[in-house]
Length: 492
Ligand SMILES: C[S@@+](CC[C@H](N)C(=O)[O-])C[C@H]1O[C@@H](n2cnc3c(N)ncnc32)[C@H](O)[C@@H]1O
Image (cartoon, rainbow, N blue to C red):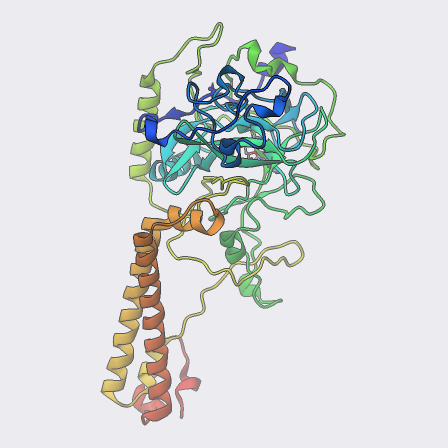
């Protein structure tokens, strides 16, 4: 049975505590330690840091030695790795998944989403690097506006929990000894043998679209289909308009995905030997597809390493990781910053994760996702041809004013793009996560750049309207033919 499990198991390093990649774990200052007012009473099991505990109410774990309940404190679940019993299993079409190995009550802390804590810049760099190396599974989630957790190389069993549009679990952020940590919690009572899933809430940002195989009746068909990026990119323009045909947009079926080559040797304590032999037709989110996960030779080979010492497992050195990072940096230096299907999923507190939308232009929410016979259509930016208008105007001043305004509009748009790039994590976090706030200075910077762009657009369009309406127009003969063969529109 154990051999069966190791066969095809993705290569990763099992950890049960976050690994800080570029900084140390924060040292909790004494004045920052929140002490609750609970008091252990033999007769009342709820007296020890249960639902009424002030720390529990604020999603903060009690600090050992400071909790009045001492060893009886029940609010140190992350610290003590008090996880529910889980089993790894192979889904049909979605790779590995996790089953509840016991009945789980609604609200229960199930497991921590562990991984490497990295900056969002590093997350973006890694996402592109992983993508370039053919790694299709997304394991990077956001922790807050500045940092992400990457469970690609190091993680807990939580890295195997799949997405569902109708999930039985959710993510929640907790403050543990001064650090924010992400836990998977049961949204409802879960019966043993049921697959666990939460809504990734992917924010798709380009490239191939991953078909969602969660099987829920309310399934949105693609991972990230509800995100702004996806909706913008798949906006359906006029029907029967061949220009927007998307026959060649690449679709990625998870069922075609192939897990990593030869995998990690795990200790028995991980319960990796518990994959059930029978098919899991009863599972809530069993896949619709028949295909199996196959090994993918393109996927980055990662040397097994365990930061939590495990029986029979050799602790690897950092060299491999460093070399790998160097390779990633080199590779990235060589690559152009073309949109690819790199996935960084970003968790928002107490609910989900999403992908970065790697695009410099902020997207509007106004468009909705549309399909035409199951096909998605590409967006086209509709721009006013100011050059054409300029040629239409007789006065040099009018033409110069329109040209100048267009130039200012372009500058404002590019400034907004660069501000957006600079503060994107904070903006995204703010939009999707009521727990995180954008700092006032960032918000002001963003608002100022947005206003400048709106003003520049307004100035441009009003100058066009003003001059077209009020200044004498040149005849087509005088203006000469416009670029793009728009002669007809130039004639008076
Ligand atoms: C965090 S991993 C989950 C574990 C993954 N199944 C594995 O075998 O390693 C996320 C990846 O699993 C796959 N996946 C998860 N949920 C899915 C779903 N509902 N439909 C299709 N693929 C899914 C996608 O490839 C996604 O990028």
